[in-house]
Length: 220
Image (cartoon, helix red, strand yellow):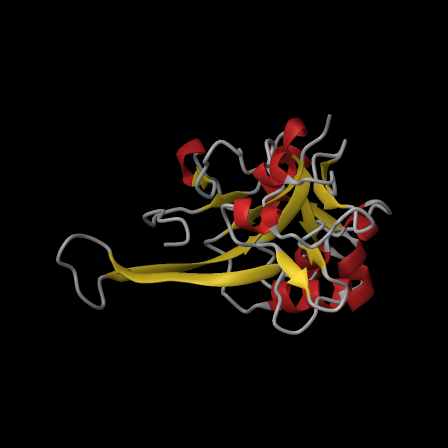
């Protein structure tokens, strides 16, 4: 079984919200709902009693974590929320009754009721794109090249993102968009203790975040 996920290098993320815009455009997310949102953490003191300029902050994109043991799947009364063979968590809208029990069970608050269709929605990890060997829209459109998509079961070396302009002989938009680079060849070195996850309450979130030289505080 696979476990598709996204790894984000938070030392590269500039909080531009391009991933949020790309997600809404690619998936038709209605106004007022966000399948992917960017949270600013800080500024926080670098050490106890510190004041500006001895502060630090980072941005963290937050969406469905496509957990290994998703609580939303466990509590769904109709089986609409499902864990798929590729590791993603998907919603069968034909079975969803809009009860929002899954939204209440999600530790990250990333499920929303579609007010028009009266069904719950969330990040699908762009299943309509990845099934055609494309990158998720938020990964493809990340201007900082901070986000990478791959299979956790295959290790970090499987994670890819769009190539940088200088990596392609032709520097046209489509050439760069369609070319890939390996995360391990692009991001700065990182130690195992610099790879973080959102709070685990038994659901085992699969998305990961790299953060160097900062104090990890999650989204708090």
